[in-house]
Image 1 (cartoon, rainbow, N blue to C red):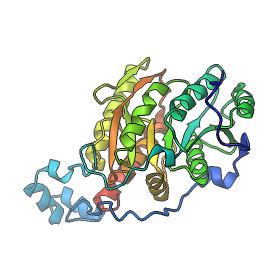
Image 2 (cartoon, one colour):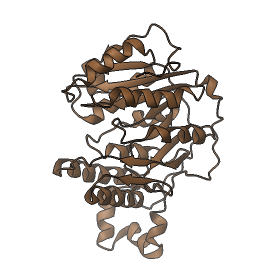
Image 3 (cartoon, one colour):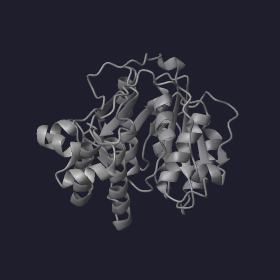
Image 4 (cartoon, one colour):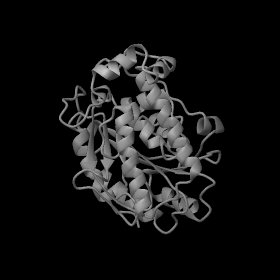
Length: 335
């Protein structure tokens, strides 16, 4: 049931919004903020082309000389701004911040109402100017989740049910949610998974760190204090190993490169969307973090709980092809 005092602001919102196909499948955002404070120095390498890299593998060319004269770990040194780096974004009081919560949902009829209620309770008590929970649903949801949330939205004005039937993947659902939050004027955007795989009790620490001036706060299962439960060893190894490999190749410094529990400032989310999300599988979370490598970011521990979703050959192929693409961009100084 809804919290009795939780839901007093924002009047007159439509509980259901249908997303046009162009928005669902071709989402792009234009960056409207100037990132003059972002460090723009690129990775310094004496080669910018793949042909030169191939020559280096044969022992010829300036890159080969570089590889022989410098330690490889120096070339792959991460350049990500992490905890301990002073941010240049002046934090505003929460009373001036509009928060958007993006949460794709599918087949969550047993927990949808309770989850929305707990998340909103955690957020509303922080004193934000406004809070909107965007529940994104599409044809993947075949149970009563949509009707349950539609009914809930008639009583809870902080909930918006977004119907996006043209989504082709879960990535599309997240992108629809990001765009809805930006269109609503949200200053911060919290991304969270439904079904209590992400714990609402972990939310407040994201706001605490964001108020310190960070541009993105990423939840981590693998940093001190984090945990992963009720998941298979195979999934753990894929997530842990993928984070290690991604950090080495992309110049990032996060302990968890695949988590989907995260908080963005409006400008940082616009920055990510302007880059364009190419992955159509779970790797899109890593792609997002790679695009944030020059922003001011920090990790907070989260308690992940949930059964493992099967990662098939198509998802693995998508991951490897996009990892290689991002590594090429890094070598060329474009990441």
